Amino acid sequence: MPIRVELPATLRERLDAADRPLIGLWACAGSPITAEIVAGSGCDWVLLDAEHSPNGLESVLAQLYAMSAYPVAPLVRPPYGDTVTIKQFLDLGAQNLLIPMVDSAEQAAEIVRAVRYPDGSAGGGVRGVGSALARSARWNRVEGYLGRASETISLTVQIESATAIADVERIVAVDGIDAIFVGPSDLAASMGLLGQQNHPEVVESVLRAIAAGVAAGKPVGVNAFVPADAERYIAAGASFVAVGADVAILARQTEAMVDRFTGAGTAERSSY
Image (cartoon, rainbow, N blue to C red; front, side, top):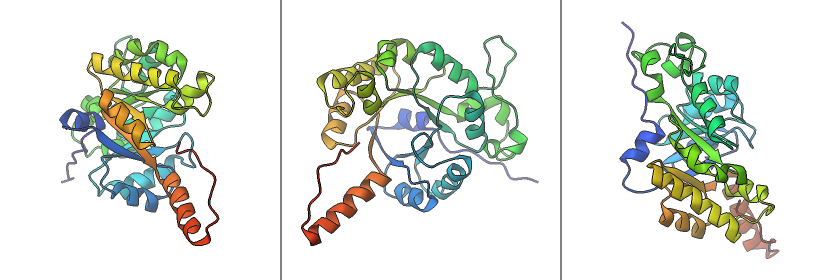
């Protein structure tokens, strides 16, 4: 008799149950060891990044295994919102997806279709069916997976352009979008303010996105590696905040340690 498996709570379920903002860290090194160390830090969620990091399907899978013993929510960011790529990450067992560079409500709606199975309706999902072959359903050991797969998936889309900010109220209202996540670095670049994440116009845009999410009753996350930024956005209503990345922490801490003993000093570096 095969065992029956219950999947962990999704990020959306954890956000709904939380009585405080959830604090997250990025895992960008592409290493299961590093991912496990980050997962054991006491943070609430960990972003496994396949957009700007040397991660593919196999390395993300290995990191999901490494993190599975810890009470954190893994959030996986594919390189882009392609239907086939989304299917592959879902099938390997990524329950919580963060899709980058979503600029419109129409694009968000197509991504919702990509994470859902077809239901016979014209507007139904387009996810390919392969649960018997996939870790997502634990090889059909998750009872009734096909009928309730959407309940086991949390979908967050990333707002990181001036175009997306202009449409953020419509994006956050799309059925099936569980949360939005603001990326100030790309947002600043799209506004002609490359590297100026704290420019007043960028901050105002981030705050607009947070207000839109709060008004719609949907969680809003934000990237804020500077503590004062994280505190500002939490005060504005952000529900989950990324406060650091493994590679950035390693870079800055090793520099500081060497500087202490060599006295050489280093030039100020961006925290983003």
